[in-house]
Image (cartoon, rainbow, N blue to C red):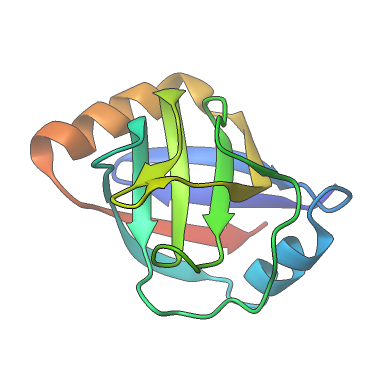
Length: 137
């Protein structure tokens, strides 16, 4: 099992790459590590944060994709109908954009620090963008 550390705002999480279910997405994302961005609150998807990546091409197709991730099930949307993005849900979520419902690749699952998913989500909602770093352990 390959694990990553995620530092977002003042919180630290550990997550496992879903290498059996989303091998291509995991491989592509691993090449980007350490991955540093800003995380903001979603507009259409409910209780989630996201990392907008615009026209960035990850080079993967859909695999292990869902529109209804559980808290801590991190998705990568490879682009198409909407911009490329990473979704980090902390509560009830239906992955959507201005064009409607989307599905993203569930490629990473938080297994440590889950109790801080909601505080991070609420922090981004009320205080704005937070720094986020994904790194190999």
